[in-house]
Every structure is written in structure tokens, then in C-alpha cells.
Image (cartoon, rainbow, N blue to C red):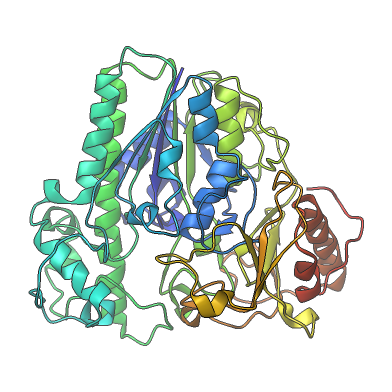
Length: 505
């Protein structure tokens, strides 16, 4: 048995034809939907990038205890478990956060791995001086090292085949061809795209001639993490830049589908296609993803699975799933390996086969922000307006942020050893106090007022619902989730919750 997992970053559900995005040129996503199960109620768990990947490895929510960070010494890693049980695991990626201090313990869990450079501000091309840059606005126009580095990287990718996404998928297809006759392997093809900046070549922009033949404004494919202040023409341009990059992702997905057809892999190879979260392209008058609250455009994700055991294809599923915590147990189940007792996610074998539900509710959020719960119809965003105290502590043995270790001032006189959690295998993690957890939190909306939405009557989440009885039910279910995850006591305090009996997750 074999598994191919294709993972995108910041792929919007509403930009894909199988989910209603018919204006976007993405024929291979249509083709995928015909060959797989399409999930209609797929939600994120821990946000954003590396927290979602820690969920994938551990099969449990991590945002209640920790912000952006690496795999911890006490974590169970699904790719490593597969490797230890004789399954060759291979990661091929251009996601450069794996190779920073805040993500540097993930890729080593695989049997083998490949990395391609150049996404975003990856410090790759060593060019002194200023890069060539057209008239630009938004983040494309910023003069700091990171944004200028992006322009230097682009100069080294003058052709489509030079882009890191192209190299990533080519290496993935090469792995498939090289191991076509072998058994017991897992391949993770992971691209940073269509994460911003929405850099693509003219080939993909030409799929939208009505826009690009008429647009004469400044260059902008990297919107800010901010409120939308741009005029409608520029907003539409950024949306088309994202669409062009989605079309490139679609083209590379087609390469995977082609090789599966050519080598007749469908009989014994599981195919998984998913993303960590979505991205706001002007909806709710917002750009980007780390806004509070996490609207449906961010939290409600595309998700496709072909499972050769059931052979079901061209069907949709309504059960509530969370790929970031469910895929680990699903992969273990596919290869006949038991999940660990600490895994909260569930194998989706039955859900794929006949829509058997695995949960009644799902939780999601980002460390230090709302803690959200949904039952598939209602979304309740529990904020800090229920409590006068908003404590925040990191629990870790790996004190790193995204790109660097914690600063000395963040650690001096602010660290103590906490009691073990149920999942730390007897280890006492550091408890680091203070609001140091999410550098760049100034980027996000700080309105942590609780909100309740009815997705049936208000799918675009325009008007919060007021229903005290419903809110109380969801709050009790949320408290039970926190207990099941052995959340720190201060999470109950900051959310104004009490460990009361409710419906089990």
C-alpha cells in the first residue's frame, strides 16, 4: 500500500470549482473531485502554518498550549511512526519555514526529504544591493530585508520550471516513478503556494485575459495583513493574481493525477489533497489570514481523499472533519498501525466509505486568540470578553519563535517548570509567561469579542446571532474539548469557562 499526500498552503475553498469557484481555471481540481471523495465540512484546527503541521504529526490540537514552534521531544510524529514501522516516508517541499528555528525538527522525522528554495522572503539568493522592482504597492513595495529578498529570489526564477513549486512537484513525480514497483511508502508533496505573494508567470495570467488585458495599475500580488483600503480595481487585481497562482497549483496537481493514471496507481494508492487554512481576499473588508475572528474563508477548507479500500469516488461527505488532526490517525490506520493514546484526531476510513461521523463538534484557533467551536451549522467564537483576566503562557521544551529562539528578555525571570500534561510523557515543560507568544500579533485584529453565527441562515457571517441557550450549549462542549486536550487552567480563566460536564467531543 502507498499514499500520496499533496498539501497546499493558504488554498481557498471558494476559489475551487468543486466548491463553487467556477470563474477560476482549475480543471484538475474538477478532475480530482470526480476521482475522490469531496468533504463539505472540513475545518482547520491549530493556526497558522507550523501549528497546523504539528497537528498533522501529533494528531492533536496544539494551539491551546503553544504558539508557532517545532516538534517537541515528547511529541509523537506520525511520519516517524510510519518510518519506524517499515514505511518509507519522503517529504518534498518548498515550504521554507521547515528550515527555520521555529520549524527545524519536522523534516528529520521522515526517512528522506528534499527542499527547494525561493518562496517568499526565503534568504536564498545572495545578491548585494537593490533588486529590480516594478512600480508596486502593498507589501511588494516595502523596503525591509525580507520583502526585498523576495524580489531577488524572483530574479532567479525567470521561467515557470525555475519556480520552487515546479521543482517540488517534479521531484514528487520523480519519486513516484522511481518507486512505482515498490510497496509501503508515503510521499508528502508540499508546496508553499498559493500562499502570498501570488507569484506566477504569464502563462497562468493569460488564463484570465479579460482582466490582464485591461489592467494598467501598479504591481500588487502581496496584500498586507490589514483592512482593505485599496480601490475596487486593485482588489480585483489581487484576486486575479491569487487565481493565476491557484491555476498553477492546479496544473501541478494535474501532473500527479497524470502519473497515477499512467502507472495505474489507483488500485493500491491513497491520494490526499488538502491545505492548512484559507486566506481573505477582501471578504469582510480584510486581507490575509490571521484576523480575529477566523471567518469561514479561513477556517472552512477544501479536502479531497481517494481511498482504494472503499473505491468511492465522485461523492461528497457532510460529516465534520479536521484534516490536520485526522490525517495522522487515518494514515496510521491505512498502514495497519495503532494511533497513540494522546491522539485526539480520528481515522476517516468510515467517513470516506459511507459518511460515518467521527465527531459532533470541532475546535480551532490560534494561540492567545479566540477558541472556536463548530458543529457544522453553528460557529461559536469564544473570546476573552467573559473574563477580566487574560493570562497567556507558553508550554514548551523548545523555546523558539518562527525564525529565532526566544529572546533573553522573554526568558529571564519568566520561566518555571510546569507539571506534566497528559501528553508530555512525564516531562515537565517550561511555562513561559507573558505576551511573547506570537511575534507579529500586531498584524491581527485584536477584537476578541465572542461571536455566534448560523451558517445555514448567514453563510457569509454578516450578522452575529444572539441565542443564550445555544451559546451555553456550545460553551459547555468547548469546555469539554479543553478538558479532553488537557488544556492549561488559564485557558479556562481567560475564556471565562469552567470545567463542566457537557457533550463529549
